[in-house]
Length: 205
Image (cartoon, rainbow, N blue to C red; front, side, top):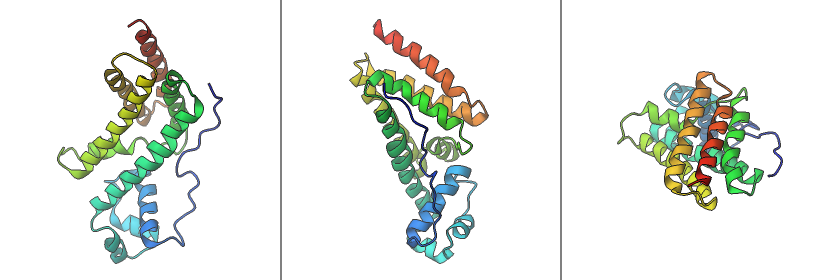
């Protein structure tokens, strides 16, 4: 197992939005504000003020707040899921079982950051309870793709019933994030211990 280096979260090296193209400035501002405060709590005026663009310019690039939230979710998936979580899991180990457990090691470091902001996909899904809402659907699809990544690791580890295993592992992941958001910053340590027992149980199947 490779030794872990200090965690590097996406967006930590935020350099501000000055000098970027208008669309990028708007999206960068929305990413920062939505990640930290949630999509419902952040209004258009806050994004206009933070990005330094005119309200009319924002609406030329994004026809509605919902369209901006969808763009935010797509960027969040790229930066949080792919460029950070999946890349960090793959960097830390080559063994699939170790990679599964490393999820919670990474989460533990994340939960203890002052900038810990919870899961935007879960937050947006809960903010838009209507299952037909495009924001709700985008969030659930992004969560499903995280579970698919876990299922791929389970298949590589030759774990029986990898789809069912991934559902359990994903429940642990989501549960630990919610617990950390409630204030239990050691939730990933408990999830790691439960996950280790779950992995051991698969060896006897």
